[in-house]
Amino acid sequence: MIDIYKKILEAKSRKQKLLAILLDPDKLDLNSISSVISKINKSPATHILVGGSSFVGDHLNELIIAIKSKTSLPILLFPGHSSQISANADGILFLQLLSGRNPIYLIEQQIEAVPILEKTNLEIISTGYILIESGGETAVERVSKTKPLSRNNPEYVAQTAKAGELIGNKLIYLEAGSGAKTAVPLEIISSVSKRISIPLIVGGGIRSKKQIDEAFANGADMVVIGTAFENNVNFFD
Ligand code: 1GP
Image 1 (tube, protein in one colour):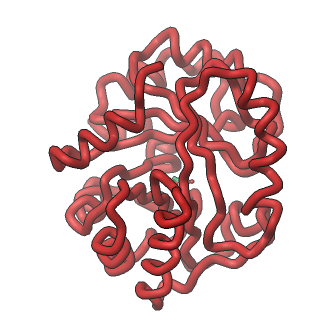
Image 2 (cartoon, rainbow, N blue to C red):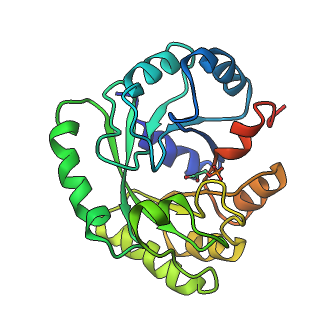
């Protein structure tokens, strides 16, 4: 066990910012793994997330074993469904869709995951997942059949995040959705980060180094980059 959460907390207390690259198993083929991971190893990334809302393939184990053989970065599952769990990863963001009002993603998927998780040594990190409006329907919205929270009401988003912390979530993830037109507004990042004491992850629609820095400056502890790296593996060069 590599104690991923403890290290995230230590980084937060040192004000060291974290960067995760999200790999979507649907878009990654085994032949390109070597070159993709070698780019990640040379980038400022501190974590690798693996997952996607629509992924249904059965090559997840193989993919993670291949990634793991080429990097020492911690690999965290970011599952859209209880079937997207691999014992070969290091940990899992055990997500609860706090912005939605669909019991399937508030508790049913989590119950379904229990017998699968019990057969693994994955580090399970309870994560309150909050989807924010981003100017168009995102895959999370479509798959979860839930509405995102308004991007114009930072107080309500902060209250939602705080409720997650009080329920016992160990992380809060503010999500605009993969490939979102607009990222989570800085005002929302700032109001959430001031309200909670647990680490804050921000992702979705972040396409430039300037946006990454702005998210950090407004209180994000970890930024997630998916599409921008997927479209250009030289993004961090
Ligand atoms: C999606 O937050 C992640 O769940 C990353 O989003 O693909 O837009 O970078 P992007």
